[in-house]
Image 1 (tube, rainbow, N blue to C red):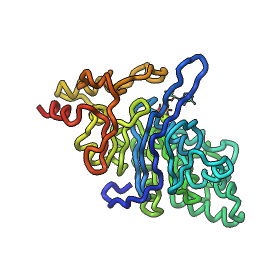
Image 2 (spheres, helix red, strand yellow):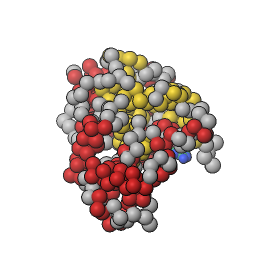
Image 3 (cartoon, helix red, strand yellow):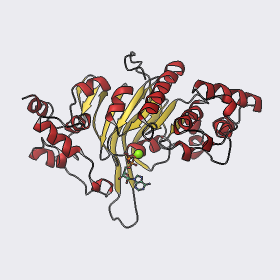
Image 4 (cartoon, rainbow, N blue to C red):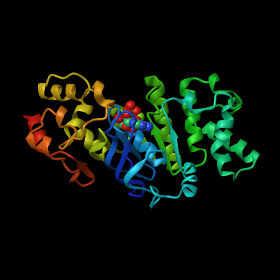
Length: 334
Ligand SMILES: Nc1ncnc2c1ncn2[C@@H]1O[C@H](COP(=O)(O)OP(=O)(O)OP(=O)(O)O)[C@@H](O)[C@H]1O
Ligand SMILES: [Mg+2]
């Protein structure tokens, strides 16, 4: 996660036009969790997927893992579309895509020593001898800063930060092509969070790991992601290199996410207040004809409520879905 390193332009993951609808009992209308979403992760780099609760971030992670009902679009992994793969091929994917979640205790089997959980990815491929597995476990634990001598202990014997290191070890032990980090540092204290982010960066540099970094926290994404895709209600509002997006957001929603603390500017302040999550964010929303963000956008004009703005290129490597770009940014600087 060295934000300064040069781009390689070798996409490990290329998501395009992905739509996921959940049908739920008691609701006539399906929940459209993702609606034509696109993003990419390049080899050895980190793409942040940011947005508030209910935006569809985890759904995208699950879609890549083959665990969400994708009804449209393509998910190209290693150059191959994996959406319609037969189940037999799909079953071999987990070794190549690994995930780390927010709750490490819930991700590890509480009744077994952590070494058992670490061996899981190796066992499921059935390629290592017992001695090889033991060596690999020790070396990987060491790489994440856990004493291999403690590997016989059960998860309850470790702190939250140590457990997250163990989950990271399990995710990387079999050299995956992609690691999905779904709110992987969100539950940790700030100082532990920083240590884990540093660990992820070091491991990425050593092993050329590629990360899809899912977070609701723009400050963290800004700190550790090369690229960012901003999601709102299942749609991409904006995407591009994190530094450029943070310096000059092209979508009012990104602007609101970036400016979380109170400020003197009333226009900016209004944008921030309107971006605050609302209690209805998990309700199946009525289909919106225009921009999904328009009802909360302080800059919205009639056309924003009438037609959906396409996600268009606004600069090399940068896209935004806003009818009013760049006009709204001029309003900010007035
Ligand atoms: N299995 C499911 N069945 C029905 N609806 C679902 C399911 N999983 C997610 N949803 C709905 O899809 C939408 C997107 O959910 P998702 O969990 O992907 O959001 P998120 O961005 O990860 O949110 P959070 O920050 O809270 O984790 C939400 O409206 C959610 O209620
Ligand atoms: Mg989530």
